[in-house]
Length: 422
Ligand SMILES: Nc1nc2c(ncn2[C@@H]2O[C@H](COP(=O)(O)OP(=O)(O)OP(=O)(O)O)[C@@H](O)[C@H]2O)c(=O)[nH]1
Ligand SMILES: [Mg+2]
Image: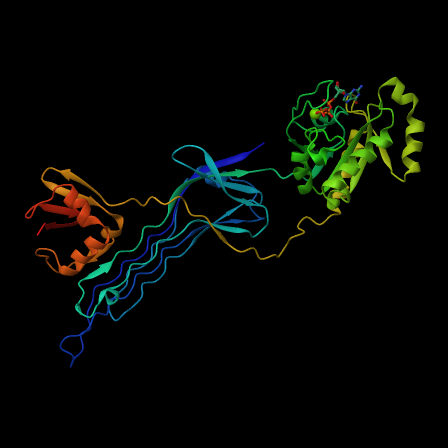
């Protein structure tokens, strides 16, 4: 009963900062005026009521937001990359697929309009204006844009049950669910056969609703007895309850009252949810014989009841039609129009201290932060500019190279920048 898709989302990278200098008529040595790069677009997933399934995401798996534009001279800031917004059905659960294995929950989009940023765009690089110091008025370096976050995620559409099927263990909930839907929960003559909620789609004419069997509730379920407590949360999401009682029990009305007490003790709002009460197993001779008495005991407490047999199917159509009617009388979106703040999910950082390895005679440095420092592309670099040396020391690259045994005259490479070790 799950609709699922696995996709890769990539936020836009930041634009690069510019290396540029003022060229003014009467100013022979203009200062640096390289603008910053724009921020990359985020990938945002939004719960959208007009989307009903995840089919689109099984067809196309890669999603990429726009990159930020590069900065330019005259301190012009690069344009920010546009966000990529992916609409998914309300009720979609998003989890992060970790390379190490195991998934972790990113978001549970339960409310229409609820957004979550699943991949954050990279920040724009700083232009060379930021690198000017009192001793270096003409910085030749700027910063490249930061890479956008990239991750593999799993989208799962949980069917949200409209109607909850509750009642004591063994009253016939699974039998009823399999009689009215295609669900196939296990049926057995002992309590707690069903240990997790089971969902089924019930069709009533051209309409349908999702019915969920809530595992057996017993006295003190709210204190954690039986299986009830964990599953009361599922009841919270439903809009209508069908409360099934066993007609062959000693006192069906007392059973119903007991389960309702449990519901209210857990959460008073649950006890107030609209309920349809149905007495089951009326096909049994002893139940049939006592029907009038059962009817009296319910009317004494002011409760209308349906009489059904999950086994023979008697009365089930009427019960489902009534549930549909009740559902339609309750507004679907109670939380409509609520503004939910956008949450941002950050995958675990990949940052690591700078690494050095040798490729032939060349010392190759892997240091994302250093790779982001760029030099003026039109300037041939002889040796290593003093300003870059400072950055090397600051980022721990100098130490890493020395540890790797670099000697003056050796070739060093980082990203697409190569120079000779002084
Ligand atoms: N005669 C008769 N027996 C029924 C009827 N409905 C269910 N039963 C029987 O009652 C027993 C329990 O049925 P289930 O459908 O497993 O009951 P449940 O409420 O899902 O039980 P748990 O999941 O264990 O809480 C089984 O032996 C069923 O065959 C019915 O309408 N008539
Ligand atoms: Mg069951």
